[in-house]
Image (tube, rainbow, N blue to C red; front, side):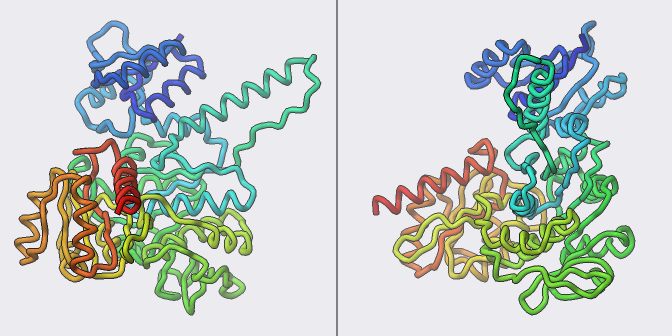
Length: 477
């Protein structure tokens, strides 16, 4: 029996291990952690005959080496262990690549970009599902691609067993997977070189994850590799960096613009004018839906809308289905999510804004004056536009997490003085409510401009904590 080693006991790693086990591999998972939660998971997986080694790093000097190493997205691709494994000829892939090998017979939509991925992925999946497709959203969006592959494999096994059972007279409906709508981070693309979506979507491109990818060029090339492998490509033509490169490198792609029928979309693409989304066609430009159908606010969401509509049209979905799905789409949790009203003040959860550009978009999209809650685990990047927007729109800023001292210094440098270091979310929510009353602010906005790992497992946990605190405040005040 062939042996596989999975690095990382997170959701993606566990799904990968189970998928490998289903495929007949002898599987072990290694994780450097030793928490009680991991111990519980170890015991659960042992019942499935999957070995878990906690507080462990793979030993490449061992005589019992795996034939395959599968890496969870959070594990850097260039750590010495993985570099050495590849040099030794051990097949080393990411969890997403493993899912692709099991699901490449299904058409994929691959969505990448610095910001806008989750909203665009969710809207595409909603439109596809409204058209009657079984098209789960997965990947970097909460449902690991290997989980989809695992479900698909289990249903195929069940169908085969049923077909071989001549005594079973019941009718069995076969499991049908029509499309996969996959949000893909640069981490996942980097370790998944053969993924070739039927449709590739690139939302935005700004500096992010440079602590891992080192240079902007490396970051760009990783994302570009997904689009190069895609049969059809759709780009956000309003993104300055993508636009600059588009006329040179992506001449056959579909482009989008919320600014009308510009040069990039003149021959092939989707645009907004006079309150309508249009598609450029050989027989004249075709109106698809009214922009007012979309409930989400902000220009960035119009860009996301165009990318989703373009994807749906390339998949052959009818205009009336698209319009209905867009009208019913409620938005995405943790991205400018309205939580509650208290004393006429809106509380808005934008925990998904994990970098300066996303947080700037959050500030632009919410009416001022507002109280901003920001901070967490700081990232590299240019914060100047974000700081300028704070100065223009924020009546006060409350700083939390490890980044609080750094952010306080940056605010001082731009002569913004109405900030407080409150350290935790528990302190930030009641203080923001009181400040909003005192300063007659219209909203309290959690838009951290930071990763969440200093206090939370992920941005979802951070956003859920904010939501809980806001609703408790509303109820008790």
